[in-house]
Length: 402
Image (tube, rainbow, N blue to C red; front, side, top):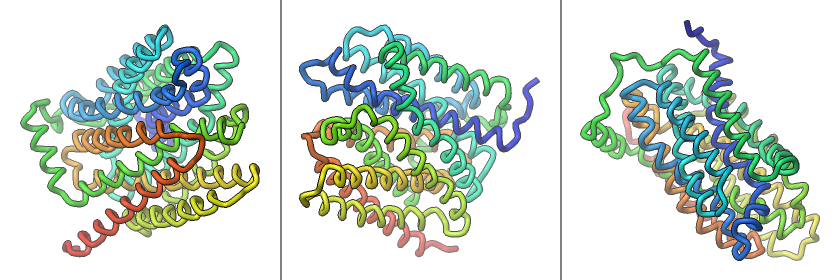
């Protein structure tokens, strides 16, 4: 018989489910130069598509996993997603062309959507309101340890067995999660609360979400925040390598930055109940506008190599910190009115935001020209748009009855 989890164990498992995404992306960063040399020697910049192809697949899969989990339960969807993820990892491991690796990464993203979306729906099954935001923030804080260590782990695997070994580590990681969940986590969606997987019901749920102004705006802001985060992730390794000639130390710097920025979720968990989700997101975006504008001005000055590197690392930390403050709150804002269709809501929110964010990040990443100008400009524009939308959300909320 399945044992009932304590809150601490539940948060740890959810954090690992969330971390499947970060591990699948961040551990690939040190491998991009080797993959480019081996599979795309004539255009090594295409290796960045290893990241955005996974994100694209995850975004597409995200749309379906929630409704299916509403119909059949949360755990079966995670089982199926993990199986697909492991199969795609095996195909990528055996691939001999970049195109096949990219196709496998799309399928791998489809599978990863299961744990990612259903974990959010499980939280919504069990918690609501600001307490839900607090649980998400604590889980996010724990899972930041994975992206902090992922590049270093990826570099270690590459040193031992080559870049293909990273896909074997993906299979092992996913296997641990599914065994842990199967033996310890009870099904959170009772049979009487399930919704049949029928297209009219899906369309009705989407219409309900899109007519809710707060949900609609939070999805748009989440798209922009994810877009700037994915843009940073696709370009950070080339910036370290090409601009600053620090490819060998990149995993250590990335881990250092991720650990520092991971405190954002801890700070958010401590403040969100008192200040509220919308206010924190608005303040974080406003602060990032000021910081990024200062970086653009300073970067135009004749700085020494060490000063230029320190400026970039500091700015990278603030971008990751802002993402840690905003993402959980934006999810909670969008999910709060949608408790009766939590699985579908999680799918629509995640799918729209992720697919559009990948569509933003991929072309901006390919604009890398040996400078950080495309990156800083893109981040600034996305922050300004997100900040404006959050101010509009505040005006809408002020007009609503208490």
